[in-house]
Length: 210
Ligand code: GLN
Image (cartoon, rainbow, N blue to C red):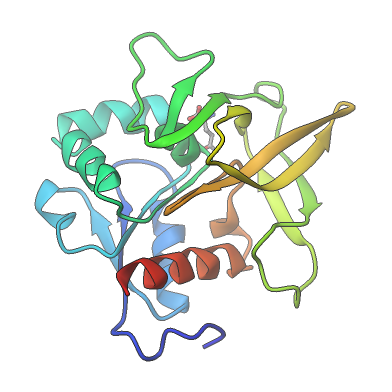
């Protein structure tokens, strides 16, 4: 194991499994030796050490979370300091504010950022880029990030640290952030097989559990 959490009992990390690519996140967590838990019911949140909000479609994740009565327990967990990592649509779900929400769209919030959905163009907007990501181990080199109709962070509060940016259309855009126990990326580390982002999140989870 590359990170030093052998002394702690295996962290139990949930993945919100109502829509999107939750299976890929569960697989990454399992590869890293964490206990990976599919979350579809409110009762499944209580015993978690951390939670991942996957990529997918944020309007659908929002709607289904409300249908399954998951919205309030997740908001309570975030407010209580549960480490949460959101990728792509999950970043949108963690954001306090969306610039261009779909009608009626809500987020869980907690992360003091404003995001723009589908920011890198609309359908023809998937691309890959090699990023320097703060906090990742240097071995392995730059992080190959896959963006799929991704949001970017348009504004961020004083307590939010930028972990990575990408140069796009002559501008530098923020694509990874952290605020205490909350982390979010515009890109999809779950589909590349480079598990350093998940490893980093597990280190946040184990530090919070101490
Ligand atoms: N565009 C999607 C949204 O607004 C996010 C895309 C993704 O998660 N790959 O939710």
